[in-house]
Amino acid sequence: MFYDILRAAPKPIIRWPVYTITGFVGLFIVVVLAMWVYSHLINGEIIGETGWIILGACMLRLLTVLMALASIQPWGEKLPHWMILSGLSGAASAQLIYPTAELVVKLLILAGWVDYSAQGLGNMTATGWFNLVAVWVIFGFPGLLFVKAAQNYQERKAIPRTWAWIGGLLGVSVLFLIGVLIG
View (tube, rainbow, N blue to C red):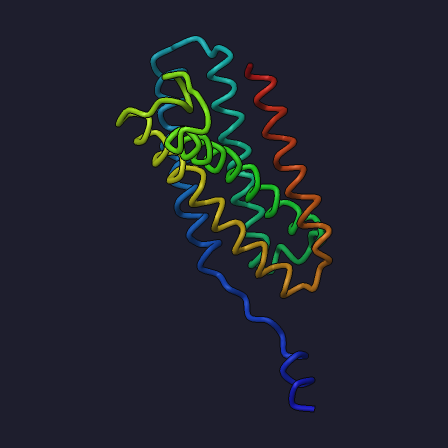
């Protein structure tokens, strides 16, 4: 009987990952958009392909912040729970895949299991390692916070994990689609 009471108790809302996401990613968006506005609107640089990609990426990151906030705010209750869980999981997977892949490649290179080009992921100089850390700070750290927020939301709302998997696969798919469009 005591176990049933504990199991029936509502799961607490863990807010700190969402607030950290909001502050951290929000600051990133503000800085990047300020630089974009300064470059393109104030200095009059032509908005080329890269400019549009930067603007689009900032809008996608803003959407992820709103999805995270929807998971803990009363206004988020108006959205379908599966949509929020899928969005949180998609944001987590999209932000974690690149820094994780770069780390794995660097470790395989260090182990001598793969040959590498000195460019891109294979850059093993101090600059290459700095870039890896920067990618983890900009994408990996928020990705881990999205994982925590998604886990808490899934447990609180008792949503099938299937929606987390679907969201995760969609996040990776969208990231690859963006890569194809950029490339």
